[in-house]
Image (cartoon, rainbow, N blue to C red; front, side, top):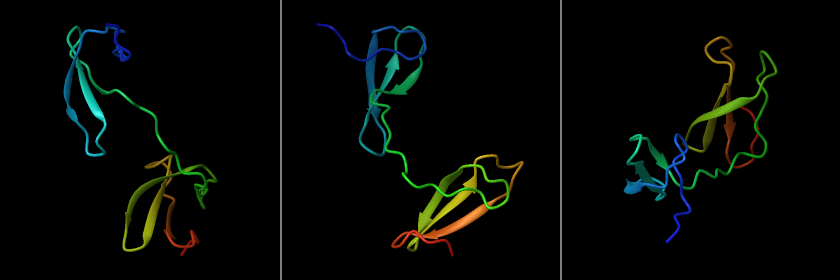
Length: 93
């Protein structure tokens, strides 16, 4: 039986299942190098991330709640750009 999952560190197929992450994806541990990783690393990125108002760089989402999503500049802490966006209409506040 051929394993479809390989260790991203050493490429070994000698793996054990090692629980699940909060989102339900399977975690593995490599028996050769002891690296822990998630098998399916595909992500759904945000389509329309805002640009930093200070430096113009991309921003990363770092929190959501109470109908808002908070973004911080990807160059943090060098650039301290910050933005709070309403989740319903995706308009800056």
